[in-house]
Amino acid sequence: MVSLGNSNNHAEGADLKNGSERARTLKHFPPYGTMSGNSSADTCPTCRGTGRIPRGHADQLVAVIPCNDVRLKPRRTKLYVCTSMLVCLLLSCLILYFLFPRSVTVTPVSVLSVMVYFNPGTIQMEVTNLINITNENFVPVQLVEFDIQCLISEVVVGKTKISNMTSIPSRSQKSYIIKNELTISDTGLYDYCKSTSIHIHTLFLELQMTMNISYLSHTEQLSLDTFEYIDCGTNSTIPHPVT
Image 1 (tube, rainbow, N blue to C red):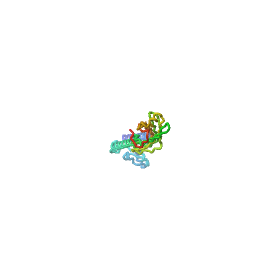
Image 2: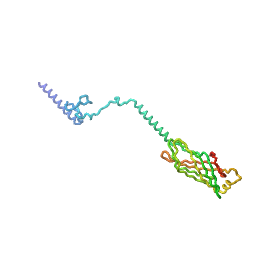
Image 3: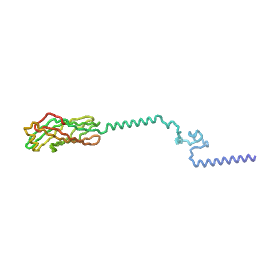
Image 4: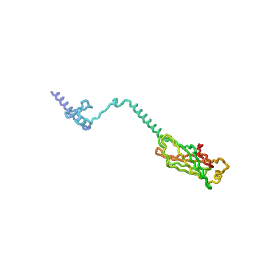
């Protein structure tokens, strides 16, 4: 009987020791669940029924997904990423291709007519030229200003400025008729042009053309120097090409 009483006392002491250790453990960790079988709690889904959480706190659970879960390895990820990169690259190339600045060229075509007026000591001439302006861009080009300076033997004999020219549509070409007013006051040229012993009074006219254009939110200046020959002795209305 004495040995049985000692064993009972030893078991009760062990239960008290385990209870005190459990109480100390709950003090260090938050009261996530309980093993006491309290009926005021729901079964913990992450503990497979071995733990309890207070009612109303089920939305605060943290789910742990294993590394071999199929949700962490979506199908065709590389295909989707590569396809997205190719689409972005294609769009970028198309934008660069259509918006990349291209050339706008000015080309003198021909001299349409030359009208000569002799005044005492001076010669007044009206030279009409045909020029082409080509736009290679995929956007319209606005012609802001067009200047032409005419020189004979490096002497300026006329200037023309045009600021009301229309825009040029994309990938197109337009022709413009430009009239230049020239005044020749050199005595030697005056005698040369008025001489009756010479049938053709040829002068080489230098044209210095400058054009300001605007497109794609920026302005640009184009320049071109060219030569053409005219007859300063008589009127000429027969077009001839500029060479």
